[in-house]
Length: 300
Figure 1 (cartoon, rainbow, N blue to C red):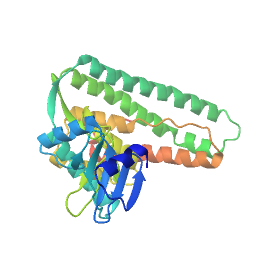
Figure 2 (figure 1 turned 45 degrees about the vertical axis):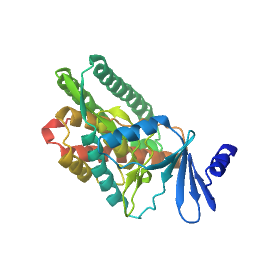
Figure 3 (figure 1 turned 90 degrees about the vertical axis):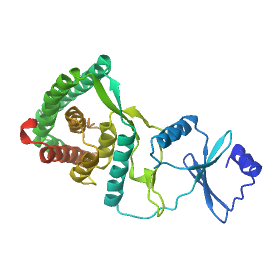
Figure 4 (figure 1 turned 180 degrees about the horizontal axis):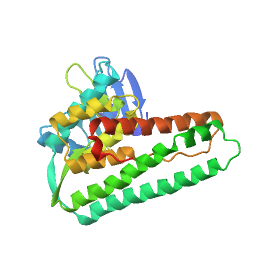
């Protein structure tokens, strides 16, 4: 515990039976209750006030403030399964998005920048994986990881072709729009950032929150948990309460379809694991889109 925090506790007569430090958070056990103490963040304070004004209260409650620190209530977490927790997060996410929705006039440069960024990324990956494939196929004896990669490489190019086709489709739609839907996104969704309690669950770690299109929360969550959760059901539940517009859904599926860049720079054992994980992502994403969207909207 640093000197500044010790002085703060002494000046505010906070009894400390036990102190636990987790990253930027200090948990104080006073013997009768627990408190969470964090360095004061004016941006977070403004965000919480804004969320409160929008009738959204699934964030940590500040019970006292000083010039340097915020004191939050401590929430005793209830243990539930990852599937239950994910569905709870989706429900809270739809509340966050619906209560903070507003419409912003289209800035042509902004959406042109998104279009060009995705187009450039897809083109780069196409060339990268084409070069990798050429090198591997020229080998007289392929390693197991290289064989695993080239055996399934058509799936990589199918995913990239899907992105090429649909980013043009998205841009054609967005160019005709006068306004776009913007929400306050959490931008840091994680199972560890949702605390379930018997009283009132909360999302924590709001320091990356910003105003943007709602799909980015879904994309971030998908990329973390695509192989652990059923995103078909999660998306259906999200859209039941907050339906996505066609152009939002197109961009969502483009962003989850872009294959990650795989680097061939580790031991053979770890390369086999890396290639397997790479294709798990591609196959899982393809199946989600095929199940979720009518077949005529997809391209191989």
